Structure formats: structure tokens, C-alpha cells
Image (cartoon, rainbow, N blue to C red):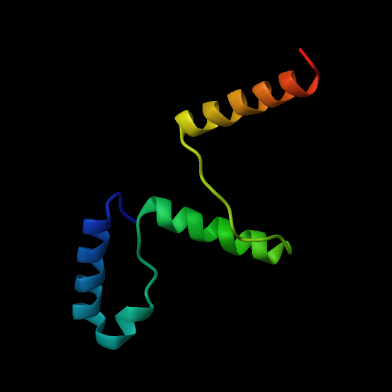
Length: 77
């Protein structure tokens, strides 16, 4: 695992040079892509849909504000 796509690609190239075709089966990627893949496979094993969104802080705040606006308008205030 690494932090950037550029570093992950460099690792892929080096592993393929060292292992040849066997290197294509080595799991390499960024922390984000690896964690995202783990979440997706975990949800499938639980029988849930594997489509999900990872929110950053700004997105999370936007969703909370949207929910508060919706609940306020639904309650007639």
C-alpha cells in the first residue's frame, strides 16, 4: 500500500519486473483504493449492495444540513 496513484503504479512496475507475469496477481494500491475494495467485498459478503460513497468532512456536513432542512420543513416550522 502507498499514498499516491503514482507510487502505486511504480510499485506495480517493479513487482512485475521482479516476478514477471506472476507479479500481475499481487495486490497493490493506495490506502484509499485498498480500503474501498475491502468495504465493497465486505458488503457483498453480508448480502448488501456494494455501491457506497465515502464522504469527506464537507460532504458529511452538507448531508446533516440537508437532513435538518428536510426535517424542519416536514414538521411545518
